[in-house]
Structures are given as structure tokens and as C-alpha cells.
Image (tube, rainbow, N blue to C red; front, side, top):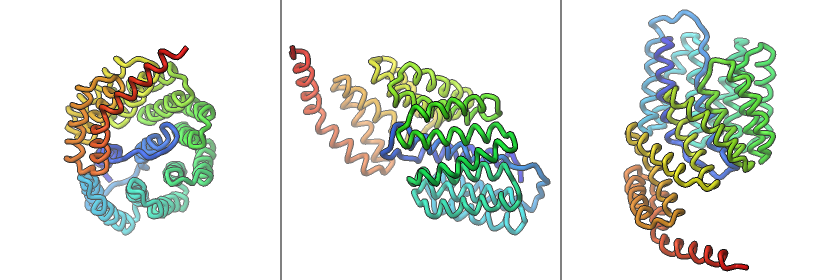
Length: 365
């Protein structure tokens, strides 16, 4: 298999996957951290070996599936990856089989079909185990654990991450140890134990900083920022998100960059630094426009509308609510459109109630 083509395909798919994900109700940062972990874990370490022209068709199906995923054609993408899977199986290319199953499993996870996701990823793990492919087992267990965590099975997810950590330690694979510890931090965060989560993330960073995966290091810094923010440690959270942001910008890792900006905005708003929050939101919107990414433009404009509402700047809030509604319509986000229209219609009432509450607090003896 052409490794350069594979990495290009992965990069494309990671961008699409992050852009299409919607947050769900969960403790601070856990759902976004889970998705970032899914993105990161698609960077499967391909074993070296002879690649022949016979694999060109299978490689092409992988690339076609990635393009279809980018266009939102999830069913077609999975079908293309299944074509690649069949070809790799017929060729006896276990590396390709594992990669195709990762694509399929994590795509199903992104769609919320956790049954099919778990089925594909357990097959992927079985391939690695049958070949005594320890790296494949480490990444397969982390992928499977992440899907189990996303579907709410924390004990099973924890068991999967712990087994991955055990194997990584047994072969002294620093990156595998760091990844597994970072994912175990997600388990602690999912239980609301942010102090334990922060401890695990910090341990992971000691290992990831010595490895060769700066993308993973940036992801763990964002996780650590989420934990610090949940603990009310604003200064520490800013430092962690700042490290993630710097790494993401150097790497051109847009999903991680957006996530770091969002974390910093949340901290600055809570700690009373609205100008810093506004500067970051403006940078976020500019980046999304430069990238011609309508989904991230929508998220940026929506955040700016909410920011100006919190600052009681009615004119600016109305302007950005209207822009957010237009983008929601363009993206076919009907539920978001309805919610934003309701928020816009209630804007004056909400602003009036906020002022009355502040007056009551100021005159209270």
C-alpha cells in the first residue's frame, strides 16, 4: 500500500470526521475529547512491508470512501470501505484489513450506530491478535474502548484501555502508553473525577512528549485543559489549552485548533476577560472563512451571537444571530435553526431579565 496515499486519506478523513460531529450532553469536554481521541486513533501505524500494484484498487476504494465521507454520504463511504476490505482480505493484506475496519468502525461510531461500530472494531482487534500484531492490538483496543465510552459503557471501555496500556508497557511503546493513559483520563472525566483525569493526562503528556506523535500530544493538552476548567483552575486551563493551540497551529491541525480556541473562550468568559474571548472568537471565524468551512463558520457565528448577548450588545447579537440562522439553513441544520430563531425572538426579554437581576443584586444590602 502506498503509505503517502494512506496518510493523505487519513488526514482528509480526520478533518471531515471532526467537522461533522455534534456535541452531546456530558461532563465538561468528555464528548469532544472522545471524538478527538477517535480522530487521533485513526492514525494507525502501518507495518512496513512490500506493496504491490495489485493493491491499487483497494487503496483507491479507501480514498473514494474518504471523499464520500467528506460530502456527507456516509452510507456510500462505508460501502466503499467495505469494497476495500474485501480486496485486502483476498490479498491477505492484514494491515489493509485493519485500516479498513478502523474506517468502517469509527464511521459507524460517528453516526451513532454503536452496535455496528463495535462489531467492526472487534473484528479489527481479532485480526491484530491473530497476527500477534501488538501495535495493532494497542490501537485496536483504544479504538474499541473509545466507542464503548461514547456509547456509555464506562467499565467495558476502562477494561479495554487498561489492556491496551498493559500491552504497551510490555513492549515499552511510549506512544501506546501515552494514548492509553489519555483515554483512561476520559474514563475518570466521564465519572466526574476531574482531579484523577488531570493526573492521568499529566502522566500521558510525560510519555507523549517523548514520542513522535505531536497530534496526540495536542489532543491530550486539550483534555487536560477540560479537566482543569471543570476544577475551576482557570490559569492552569489557559496554559494547557495554549499548549494545544500552539501545537495545532504548527501542525495545521484545524479540529484541534478549534477545540483549543473553544476551551480558551470558555475560560476567559468565566474568569472575566471578555476582550480575550472576543479576540479568539474573531480569530476562529476568520480561520473558518479562510478554510471555506461552513460548519465551523456556523459554530463561530453562533458563539459570537451568544457572546454579544452575554455582553448585552443587542445590535451585534441580533446581527450574529441572523447570520447563524442563515448558515443553519444553508447546512440543513433544522433543529439549530429553530433553536436560534427562538433565542433571537426572546433576546429583548432575556436582556431585560438580566438587567433586572443585576439591579437587584446591586441594591441588596
